[in-house]
Image (cartoon, rainbow, N blue to C red; front, side, top):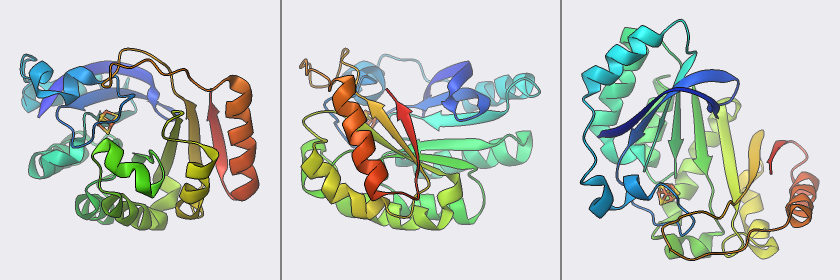
Length: 230
Ligand code: SF4
């Protein structure tokens, strides 16, 4: 399940120094995804698997320096039972707060982990309007279900919107707004062109346009603590 580990990160867990665990495999194919090595089987097949015990030992040694652990991917929730076991071990054996990054495609697992208080923070990438989810190979009904579950835990949730021009226009945002109405932490991030899944180069929005999206969302979601990441 684990094919990457970073001992220290200052940017992956808001307000905390954290270690980052990378799982492999993903059920989406976002054109702007830069985690190609963790998403495409032809690439991750050649990456060595990192034993869970090694990761736990490493975390134990770092405890006192790090303040949390981020589990990201790929899509970690594809690993259901193994992910749950890893989270339980970090929670009960090491006692560090855990943040999970997800594309929202496994509402059932997310609900259970939150209800059992095994997750301290969760970041969901809300990628586009409902009708464009099939372009990513994603099922919006499942993401919608996850968003509905997360509303009850909004204090520990961050919704991330990546301003990738083909997937997030004003029209798309208008259709996404109703699903965002009860969230406090929403992060607006600029898409950065780099090596990606689609192999295509798409020009990012200018800072001015990103700013106008920010103002647009601020106006429609006054309850939100809207973070700018551009
Ligand atoms: S959901 Fe995340 S990991 Fe999967 S393809 Fe999209 S950006 Fe990449």
